[in-house]
Amino acid sequence: MALVPYVENPLPVLSKLHNTSAEFNFANHDLRITQDWKRLGVAAVVWDAAVVLCMYLELERVELKGKVAIELGAGTGLVGIVAALLGAKVTITDREPALDFLSANVKANLPADPLGSASVSELTWGEGLHRYPAGGFDLVFGADIVYLEDTFVPLLQTLEHLCSDATVVLLSSKIRYERDTRFLSMLKQRFTVEEVHYDKQWDIHIYRAHRLPPARRDL
Image (tube, rainbow, N blue to C red; front, side):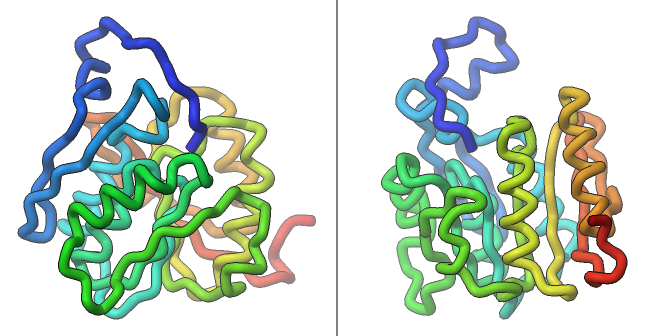
């Protein structure tokens, strides 16, 4: 996620973003997620897309136990934390400036983690991908990570590197602009994409994607 601080917005719908924490209950655990909008901007608040994706993981009974997963642009880390609580071994990633904040949230909400079910790691899309196993993940998560057009190509490069033909990608997003739809079109050139859930209350879409075999990918 972009690390851009913003001034406080007076609109009531955005006021929750300026709270210093947000509380949830997932996987029978009470979670308290620290937020810091003033210091880190959009990377340090819980967006609705993350909450809806967590609900989907829990309520749709996505098979997570024993799976190897990675979260991209994790921000506060909510999705990765919930996936770990549901049994996955998760690498929770974001850009370097957000890592201390992200790590603090993970440690606060997974205090007793003897199996190492969650780890925090730096990942700038399209860079240093050799540090992550090619095709080495069963699941890839992304919540509200599609909004900056300059990141679309490196994000696709990252997804292709992380995914095998069996990997399931789950992207949760509010479709705000035409460019968001353009990203989905770009994704469909390399992945099969289907919408598997729509939350009407929060206007959040969840897409499931699988990497296409090489012969079927558009060049």
